[in-house]
Image (cartoon, rainbow, N blue to C red):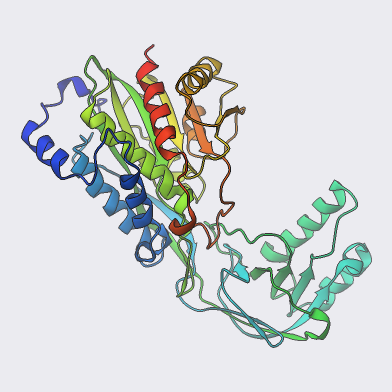
Length: 439
């Protein structure tokens, strides 16, 4: 199939664009904080189910972004904005209960289920592995053997490995217990004082395991009760959403903005992960930029990609780079926006040290216009969607804000506590950067 050539794309419908511009929520060159807040509040609301794969949260988010693309007047490369692909994902749609001794814990607040967990229901005897026993290899082996058919509770709260090697050895043992078919235990509970941070799973283990952060006396605990509904969904259809504004002078060259719209979804019937900063804020930046450049077209065509399945392992970005809708070599520069909702301590630019020329442009513009507190530099890191483009040779940055709330992959990353402190100045810096980056 020949590559799409926007030079030959039919003219935009001027009247439709004027009508859309009049009725878009609040269009002030894409820099209106109220529009950004509306986007974050909507995507992070309970109605969107954490934008995961339970109760169609992922599709609800995609439909909202489609409507915004349409209202803004973005063009599409194909019949619509969707680029469909499939994923495998382990989900937890219904029952989610963990009771240790007499203490019933709250999902999300007190405990997390391991993303790869299998379904489980019942009461189980427990064997407890505490600080003193964890430091003794023979004691660990004995505890594992005696926990056959039972749940093993590992109390990490006061355990500090003597060195890195000891910590790695314990991690390997825990991973064996949680995921190996040869593991003799029925499941694992890790009690920790560390922050609870959830994730996603693309496979389902044969075991169930949990992470617990709750003040609990394990000395008299002999039994736990668990109930987890885990459902593996193979070949689940999801999508990237891609629109563009045609360039005024060089429409066959591209600037690209990306941001993932998916998040962790739900863990049981009641608990959902809002994902306000991660990454409703990035979508707010993407849509704000799309609004700005629909009213102020760039010399280059400007592409906006809302990626799916980032939380499952950068799968949407990977699919796009393997099935691009245009020649990736035509991308002049790409910026990936993830965690765009704070900024009290400025921004950090991944790949900044690799593309020093572009980093210096952003730094200079920030200083000239007195926008963000600082612009930090970082090297390469495969920690968001930009990585898939970087591996294909595309010049790109991943930019994230710093400071403010520390909520991340938990139930506390919500709209009500996301400050969006520097969003307007951040947005302004990006438009200045994109407007200057003419190669």
